[in-house]
Image 1 (cartoon, one colour):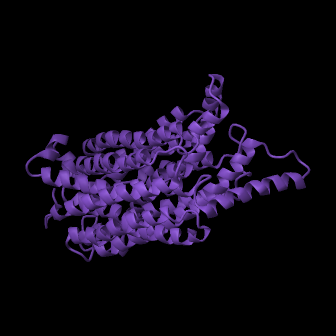
Image 2: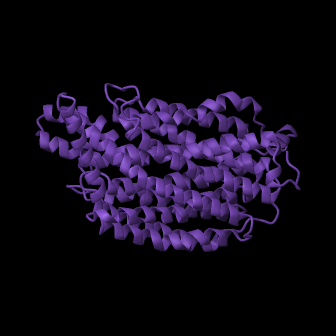
Image 3: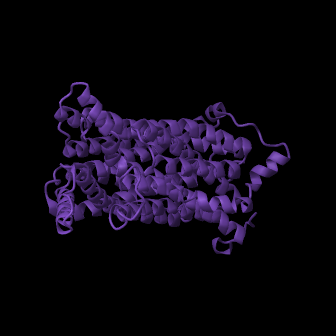
Length: 498
């Protein structure tokens, strides 16, 4: 589809369309994944109310029933772990199947249906009435996201065959993942603030977390229109037409030729995700809530006072407990989202920096270590410091700066894998190999870091300081193991596997 002499700036209209769809998919992959840390507290608070009433009806005291579902309480921790980890496992396992289907039925077809799956599942999640419904729909979202990443990377790697062009296209389109992170933070700030009362009510309320979930339908809309114009991977299609495409098999990943590559890419991929999910993605749990960062707690209290004052000025009834809870939650979520925005700005910088370096640095191990080694040192130290600084309202600016640096160092590692993996697996196993490393390594072993952090940090009453300390330890363990294993990570062959 492209000549080997083509430059990145000489793309055809179809190639630009391909890049745009891939970038949109990458952006909303992260948009969907980063929703959960932002909405988990208000979602559990809203959907647990019937369960609290049932517990009271069953004989529990109102105080005990409420405490069990408060952040850090027994039921809250159990559901927080479930919502973080079960969708990741489900997405990882079905994503592995999706990689196999990508090799079997083609990149474009699987890419399209995976985006449609996660977009419409995300929209439906905004109407969840129970925690079980939210869990099922988040599992469907993760399945779509996990499959989309694999299909999109294989698709781009085979559409753009000239090495420097391919590295640049993969690097810059994946950078839009961090644009998705910026979008989710920015959209949540708007939804929880200026737009909070102007959107249609859902189940009688204006709960920002529901609107944020529903906004995930956006990438499906242009895709429905332009899908007929998207080309299939010419490499895959030519081999399929000529009858030269070998049937994919997961077991082939552990053949003598590929076992080392499969195992090491899976484990080092897991370390990158462990740094993110074990620590960075726990910032909303640490900073928000009644015992979170002093500055954010003050913001929530001011929002409640403002709601009371507004009602008094309008000679209206004083806000009830639910309205005050929603006002405080929206203010907290908006303040935490602003921290997340700084993290994603850092991620965007890191991804673009990696895209620039990827076409200049031959050694893939060296490219990885430029981001990996500093992250192993910085992230644990940052979270250890946060654990000592939550009561000082003046430190929130430093937290934002730390989130920015952590984003540069950790999020850039995610883009590394999109550039590396297509070069070390043959065409008939490219989707399957990517899927095993990304989904078993990243989505299952990597996101298990969130489960470890929340499990070992569980306490009554909840302690944000403890979450921060445990996050520092979990990030350190994952980071050190990944840095050690990178020493044996295979360099891609001079000639791409085909």
